[in-house]
Length: 138
Image (cartoon, rainbow, N blue to C red; front, top):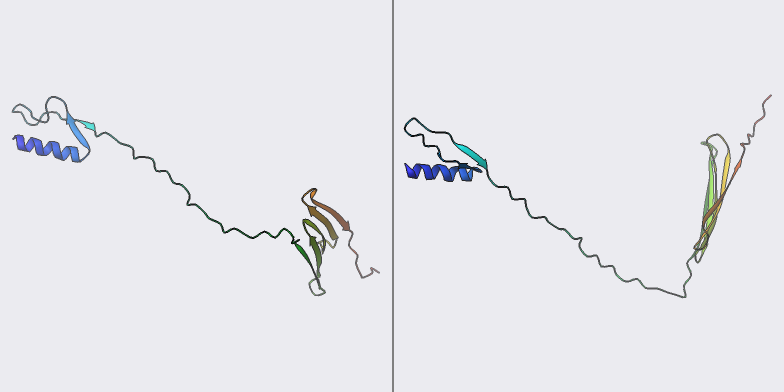
């Protein structure tokens, strides 16, 4: 009988509950007595700390005597779709200057002239011209 009781206790412990109290399921000849169970203790998993992998960048060469320079421009004028726009921009060192123009859906021509440098930041002046229609109403 004790072997059966030990097996029951081991099985209960493996299931996550442990019987507690004075009777352990033996009922003094009248059948099994009351069994009280306490939940098995809960142990929270240890926190896991992640660190990002170190990133190594290749050193880039610095040419103190070089000055970045470029100049570009484009324009589109499509009579079939009415698409008309243009842009031109130049850079010399840390100073960028440019402008762009486009026809808005209502026919207004928007022109933006801009400059950017490390002292003044980005500055733009926007000009809007009313639409001009090449046809006349009679």
